[in-house]
View 1 (cartoon, helix red, strand yellow):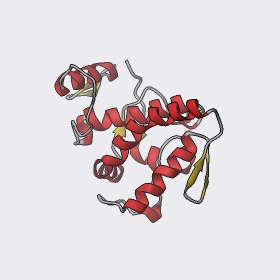
View 2 (cartoon, helix red, strand yellow):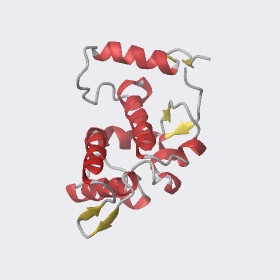
View 3 (cartoon, rainbow, N blue to C red):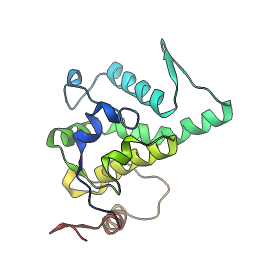
Length: 172
């Protein structure tokens, strides 16, 4: 079961200290439901730069490493990045509301994540909140592949895993 944390959406997505883990929404971005293709492209590149420890030169992302390993890393990131940026209306709504995110760690631990796998896991935890946490008001907004469980079964499993209880919100 998860420990109760007091991490909120703005702590993750409007916090320059978290730029190495989560895509950031700056004051200049203005929280809105629809963003231009250019804005999304820029944010995806910024996130890839951080997640892959890469450089951006012009429109090119330069990543050190063996081609096979880099391609595996990109493939692992692909679904998560698509799910995140395809759900921008829900994400920005919850940044505005500063919805509490249920995670098994503290913000200090998230700031210190180093590996791509750790960062990907953290972003997936946020997506799980978006998909299964009723406080986000965006249930079932993320398509899940390769599962035999229905959405309701997956939501119940997630709520049990994190200790979510509708009446008390958290179980100890």
